[in-house]
Image 1 (cartoon, protein in one colour):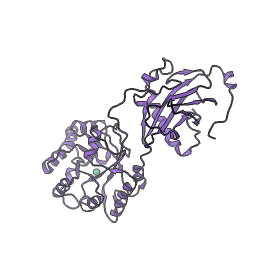
Image 2 (cartoon, protein in one colour):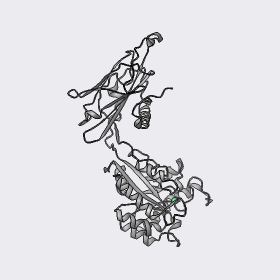
Image 3 (cartoon, rainbow, N blue to C red):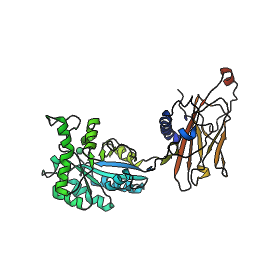
Image 4 (cartoon, protein in one colour):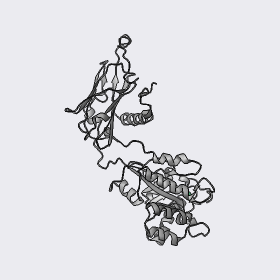
Length: 400
Ligand SMILES: [Zn+2]
């Protein structure tokens, strides 16, 4: 199958375009019988806008130990840690607190579009002695995930007194289980009753945190990031509202609460931290809003016109920067559209043949304040006979 959007001349955006296309396909996949039913873009393409929509994304960054020299991949040196915090700052990313993160997830608060949450796992006292002073230099909040069996155990374990001091200074203390065993299939413990054991892994640590610190924690980090449906269900059932894994992915407001990805920093994998800082363009998918773009050919329609006029009304994009408007046609790429600034309409008269029967149109634009918008729609193109398609006038594509 020929991949749409493959022949863009703007190479640097090819990857992003594929991502958009995947999004677009899944958006349109749910349209009922779009090729055969009467097309009605206004009601099927743009369902009511979600009132709590947010463009913000959060990179949750996970650390473990801070030491010099770093003895294994889960440790980094204090200087590396300081350099990473500086890199976060230099990238214009805002470090938010867990409290703000949860309020944003509950739709009670907005956060900057590019935000980061710093977390440290396990309960090593280097968090208190090494990481915390560096985080304070930057004024960055963070969350410390601890597990019962490694608190007040001497050696490198954190004490309750240290946890109390941190918590009173604004550090969020979260749960990281009781045993730090694999919650899906315990290896060190042999529980008689797995369900009871699993429940206790979630509740006992929270009870201890309440008893010693007087706080009610709502956040949990799965040991080793390992989870399955039963584990996630237990986590939610026992009252946690944010449960974190170790699969690095930026979090949106829609990311499921029991599978929040984190970018785990490892000294042998510097690319993980770098990918946490790469948010990609912030894009609003207008296809999911109730905006009416009056697209032609309409979404889901089947046309026989070999060279249709492609049109959309973009009046609903506020303060659009005319230079930023871009239209792409699957199989063809970016086309030189016309923008009627009075009617706020964009149009493009096709002069080259369409590739394949399924056509996706993608429009991207920016407001003068820099906010990005995109929407897509699809139609079917019906070539009535092979002989007809052979008589099509071949014109060179616009961007070669
Ligand atoms: Zn851990």
